[in-house]
Length: 540
Image (cartoon, rainbow, N blue to C red):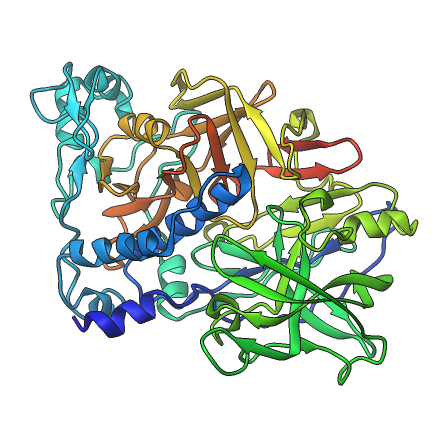
């Protein structure tokens, strides 16, 4: 492996371009729905390395959200270097996505989370070396299909590169759902071809569909900006509160301009005005800085004249790279979080009287369902997307402006893990679920065949039928087992081992979770600024 070249590639942005030209419509219910376009990634990256990129991004994002010290750049780079060293095949980064070539050999250094053979009722060493009491008995009780302790131990005792036939076997998911067949061919094809799947026709008026990328990472909407108006593709982010796009004179921190994106400025818009006031925003991945401006924008056909937002004159390579499909970000947390000290679009639309409620709602879709029905809705909830009997409204407990809720329980296959007093920041801008290390470990102890890599990540069977559920209010929301499998270690073996969509964070918060799209694909999610609440409902 040419480490230097490969490592540079690994530090590139995970997102590639998407094509869509949605048409916005009005309705009579006081709500507006925008398209969300799934973010595509350059996928010549081993899933274990991609997992670490997401962990780094999420850890940095969670640190900023909670006011704790961020992991420094050297720490994040070192974590990726460790992943590179741990990859068994020296040519694996090239071979993994050559579907007609040699299979990857798995990953070295993965250590057992569940009990090893002969220790089903005892203790177990985790990758960190600490002794974990009682793991064996719990693992045995949670074995899919009611397997006994010996069978469960054998399933959990498989090391990386040795696939367990028991783990691959399709078994019934608790609750009567169908068995998990592993990663679908349509997902594998979408990754191999860098394919973006076009959205289907909207199910209701004023809805604009999602374009879907196979790994279910990030969501975009089209917003019109400037005069004459032009379409800008914006990442919809409930975990930040600033709106920005690239400036016409934008420069990349890596040198040169900011790539093949759309830019805004006096040359392209005759209503553009620069206030000369500076702004800077740092995200889990990437940062921008520039000037606060005013210009006319249109959100799903609703005009906002002389709206205040930012244009970035400098972007990190995460945003300036040609592989990044979006032109900017629309933050949809509360404006108290804004680094620009400006109103978010939903707050501004209500202030102008265009909308009655400061409500933003999200339906996040997955490619595997073949529905392509994701959307973001301004001003209310789309009742066609969820079961109203399950709608649960809970207080927002964040003091900073994030959308954070108490999470009184976490269960696996119906067994309460006893994780009390937790809170969860619900963030559409994060792909994974990041939990405190002890919580992430407790979850994976209950998943047959789960293994820890010692760096915060876990590997689980792609065919896992484990049902992990998070409780908000009095309602438990189960995560589809397919969403727990972030990506197969080997695309030629979609029923083998997958990296888990739940990882551990090392920020130091004992009770705070960062909950991204791995969970949000399984619920209808809505936020309300005026009531300072958030809502969840089960999808239909």
